[in-house]
Amino acid sequence: MLWSLIKIIVFAGLVAALTFGTGYLMESEGGIMLQVAGKEYTLGPVLSVLAAVVLVVVLYVLFKLAGFLVALLRFINGDETAFSRYFDRNRERKGYQALSEGMMALASGEGQLAIAKAKKANKYLNKPELTDLLTAQGAEMVGDSQKAEEVFKRLLSNEQTRFVGVRGLMKQKLEAGDTETALKLAERAFVIKPKHGEVGDTLLRLQAESKDWSGARKTLSTKLKNGALPRDVFKRRDAVLSLSNAIEIKDSDESAAAAEAAIAANKASPDLVPAAAMAARGFIEQGRKGNALKVIKKAWAVHPHPDLAAAFAEIEPSETPDARLKRFGPLLKILPEDREAKLLNAELHLAAEDFPGARRAMGDLIEDDPDARVLAIMAAVERGEGAPDAVVRGWLAKAVTAPRGPQWVCENCNTIHAEWAPLCTGCSAFDTLTWTSPPQSEVVLPAGADMLPLIVGALEDKSEEEPGDIIVANPDSGDAAVETVEAEVIEDAVTVDDTETAAQK
Image (cartoon, rainbow, N blue to C red; front, top):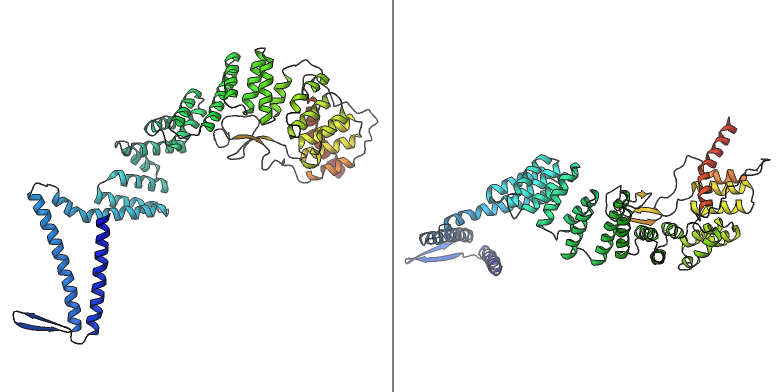
């Protein structure tokens, strides 16, 4: 570095001196006078400049000859590569220039030019570990996957480039949909570079897709050991893998093992709602109701969720609605202002046929956050309090066009899932599902659907028959009434559409 700086300074000084001398000679009248062997020679300004140029060329040639003589002396002294290094300097300069131009072409999206420059650079440099990578990336850019695959396979033979070759082949197999081969390549690449974040995440995702939960947990532990994963993230993802294993075991009718796996997942991440619900059910099956109660309360304090409420109800499945409402009291007091707590409280009052209490429990949700579930509960409340059918149908019609409320949504691609899963079905991302309202939660309906609440609400009940009871208090389910009302929402909408069609005819 210091020698390069010295050469740059000397070169700049020579250029400045020549520029100054040339200007001085052009402005002088006498020129230069030389005395050689007793004879005097006078050069005019123009000839003086030409003489200076010739002098520079001569000096350059002398320096080259001096370098050649130095190389010759080194060769005579036993340095067999002295001559090759002397003549290869120019080739290296051309080779690195071609390599640089190829990288610029790749950055600007010119794949074919990058391949051509890589070929030229390899001709001068003979360093395939540099030029093959440029060729492979250029081939991928122009869509020549076969050529890219050939280059990546060549990279496997060199220990320095083996990881690049394995990773390149892995990405090709992923794009081609060959996940089985991609998994094997990802395992090999992870062994070579266990600290590589992208390869580790890809391997974890592929192992989760193939339901290799044991292998995925080993990969996760390796990432933690190598410092590629924070400990809190490790605990969360390890719990997700343990829960996924529990779900798979449950499907194979091994309830005891499934319960233990779910309990382990809940201990690792108490705020993971599906793990808490499954762990609570596992405790209930074992007769350990106190443990189930603790698990649910701990998870509810972090994130109230309907699955937790359902598991809480299963602790005492045969109790009356009034007893259930009383038993749920301590749970509801943990976060009384939470939206889910208000809705659960309203549903419990509905099951106990305490309709004014259900209305009070709703609070300001009907004005501030009226989704389909809120509006269905209001329809049940109105029916329970004896409101006309037109009012009830008006609430149901509003529920048709209202947002669906919180659901399991992928943070990566916003895909909505009916149930929690470790992998997103849309983008295959791992551990990205959260319980939240989707960005576009409105139901897509035919034109004019927004008028349903006005149309249905304006109808008069001309039926002489007694309205059928749609509110059923089931002691086994605190929200049975709401489920019954929600089931009628679409039916009522269809009835209104048929009425309008008949009127038009």
